[in-house]
Image 1 (cartoon, helix red, strand yellow):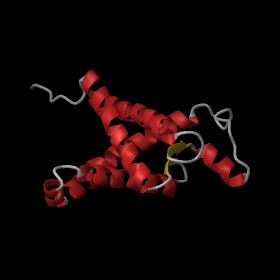
Image 2 (tube, one colour):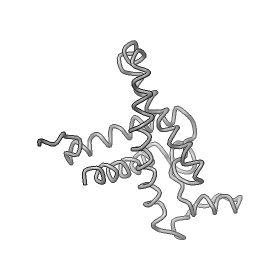
Image 3 (tube, helix red, strand yellow):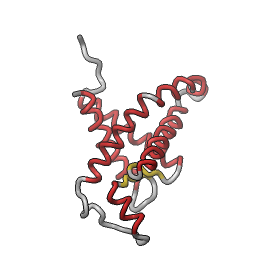
Image 4 (cartoon, helix red, strand yellow):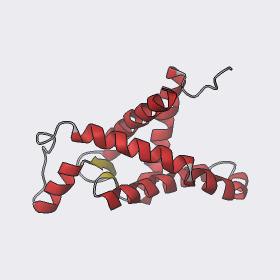
Length: 152
């Protein structure tokens, strides 16, 4: 149950991050649902109201991207963080922002392979989005108590 709540918190934090960092249009960080990606590929003109075709597409896409975030951070993220321990020490932990940006870029790359999901305009947008998302998810997990260890 706690894992499901953490995925939902991650999806909500990702949605808020796209609102904060994404701006208007296709720059910064944004989410592209499968129907939106297909319509964008079929028509060269910019499309402004694509949620009218499938209202649940963005929600499902956010949940899938949040699940991919959890898998990437749980596997590749642990390896990258372990390997980069000397850089964490040298930069007094600031290298963590770069590592989180790299994880954000990996998730964007994986979702690009799927044809929908997370889109990033550049690496530094990913670093900023990773910072904002980690702050938002940390606040929400702290409020909900999903980050606490269980007493057995």
